[in-house]
Amino acid sequence: MFATLSDRLTATFRSLRGKGRLSEADVDATIREIRRALLDADVAVPVVRQFTGAIRERALGAEVSQALNPGQQVVKIVNEELIAVLGGETRRLQFAKNPPTVVLLAGLQGAGKTTLAGKLARWLREQGHTPLLVACDLQRPNAVTQLKVVGERAGVPVFAPHPGAQGEADDTADPVPVARAGVEFAREKQHDIVIVDTAGRLGVDEVLMKQAADIRDATRPDEILFVLDAMIGQDAVTTAQAFQEGVGFTGVVLTKLDGDARGGAALSVRGVTGKPVMFASTGEKLEDFEPFHPDRMASRILDMGDILTLIEQAEKAFDAEQAEKMAAKLAADEDFTLEDFLAQMSALKNMGSMKSLLKMLPGMGEIRQQLENFDERELDRVEAIVQSMTPLERRQPRILNGSRRARIARGSGTQVSDVNQLVERFGEAQKMMRAMRRGGNIPGMPPGMA
Ligand code: GDP
Image (cartoon, rainbow, N blue to C red):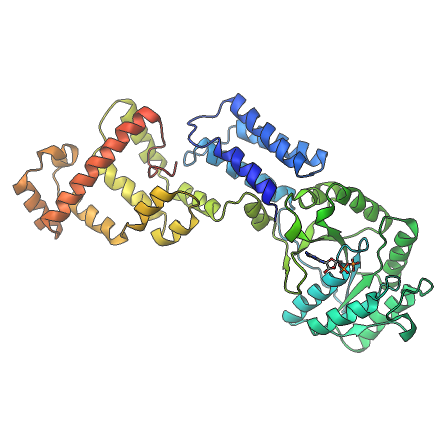
């Protein structure tokens, strides 16, 4: 799903990695890449313009978080704007105060309405509802039979029209009375939700629109879901607009997202119609269906896994004051001390369980391995050892001779070998900090994460 778009965007972000500061030219180059990626993904032009404009403004604006490097900041902004473009909050079905709730499905032929009807019915049944499917697609050969099959699989009854219309195309059959009778039947039999499957045409035409509008007027639906094949690219937008004018709808269902590498329809439809995507259909099986969550979708598009959660945690754990001190120290060419080392390790501890953090890190082999070997109890040991040192020893660990080390081990309830190990590791960290001073990385963050 959205693989091409994902690849393009992540490649763009990769090129920002390691930059200490973003110039206006950097931001513009990034925006250009994002714009190209979106246009190639078939995202509607006005949506692209709005989206890139918002990102540019925020990336250049005063929005500076001390915990994030510029590359991470751009990712964060793009993620938030993606969520907004996808509709912000998850939109849930509105149920009628007086059941049955009527859900009308509209869309082109082949969009996946009938399949969707079954998926939605199954999903609702699993949540304790008692849906009824109503077959109002009397035009497509076998549509009624198909709905019956789907209904059976979903474990949901199907209200079908007179037997003559079953199994064959019948252009003369009027779906409006069927729809009306279906809703009436649901009321009598106490089904709390009615899902009305309507006919589609291969293209948008007036007869189709009129028929769907007549069914709408006869059934007064609480939700009209426009079912849209995500794979039709640019056409998605014009089709959506035509349905919006012809029938109107309250929400969108994107189908065939499993085959959509580009994501253009998903990213455009909300911006173009103002109506939210409510469900996603991701395969031919009844269970290939999920409510559409803009935040999770954005994170899939950005291929971020849980990196965003990681970024949030880093922001929380990050101690701005300590970072400032560290920066001043580096600027003044002062050495990194054991106290700083301790502060860094505690910052890591604040970031939550190492094991769960590890799962959030994509493609950071080296640091992942380092963290994998990291024992959280070790932090307590390090803390105890450093606290058993005199202030002078903390600043100048090279004075730590054998007797001092023995004293520290006793004081901290550890072994001399633990003290030795810490001093050695600290020496390495100190070297790394010197290297960073030359290379420019974020102090206060473990090396490699910034
Ligand atoms: P309708 O004409 O709108 O009722 O469309 P159908 O429900 O008959 O679906 C048309 C075709 O698309 C069928 O072959 C379905 O199996 C297939 N289809 C529907 N939804 C999806 C989906 O989410 N992913 C994939 N890969 N195929 C789907």
